[in-house]
Length: 115
Image (cartoon, rainbow, N blue to C red; front, side, top):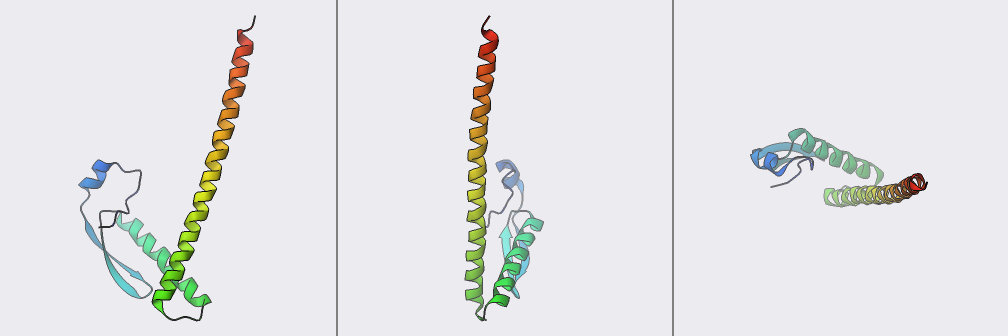
């Protein structure tokens, strides 16, 4: 069973959702995905994978669908890792700025305490 549910859902919500079979088409192949995830979300994922595979296929000379799928998977993995790095950098910057603000606030509060 695929777990493609939105991370914002509680565990209770996930357990109450029935497993369903969702038919998707990726690169002219039909797949039945069994999941308790949101149907529209899974359809969007399948459309995204299909789009990436078609982009890869149009830019290469290979007609082997397995090779196209692997290249598309590598492309999607690269996108994921770049976004993770961007998020980590933003988190680090936010933590740094938060620490600076806390230090400034401490200084201001200490100055107010001095008669």
